Image (cartoon, rainbow, N blue to C red; front, side, top):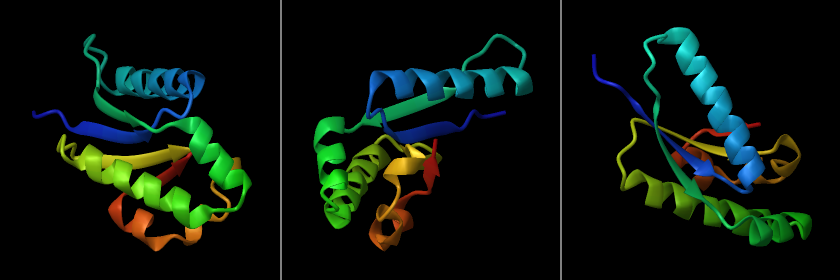
Length: 108
């Protein structure tokens, strides 16, 4: 059986990256208790700039940055791609269709 590779645009902070990585590994272990680990590629975005833009209501600029990060991630050819942002950070960005056409956005 081939293992699928998950690609995530996120990593907007080390704490959140560690948290979702632990969750992914725990879910993997429940499904595959053979001691293996999931294949995962993370494209971390620079959180400070993204959060400033969100706080200023520049949702299109955030979506554009995240869309570019998804395109960069695509070069690594993961079978599954998603964008990870905190729920409170998704307001306004949801309307930006370019981002959602490239990868699902997963609120954490």
